[in-house]
Amino acid sequence: MPVLNIQTNAELQDAPALIKQLSAEVASMLGKPESYVMITVTHNPNMLFAGSDDPLAYIELKSIGLPENRCSDFSSQLCSSISESLNIQPNRIYIEFTNAERHLFGWDGRTF
Image (cartoon, rainbow, N blue to C red; front, side, top):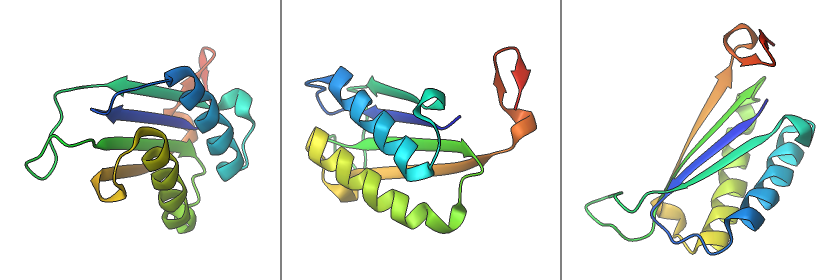
């Protein structure tokens, strides 16, 4: 049940292609079936980081069983993908990782 949420003030040229790419990437990174992966991208022009509205992104990656010892690798991979896809400098990307507990995540009328 990995979920990748992206908020950015960068222009989204081809959002459908971006979310397809990221869906496959997240599934591969986490070793989870892509059939459980959800990706959202929200364009929000009202974002500011370090006093500047230059292109930026705030990303949340949540997954049951997120291997916390690999978050640094995930950060590097996601930063690279987002930076290249949306033309955002890596130092203007924040990523929050969350290891979700099974009983606190619902799907299909039940919890995991």
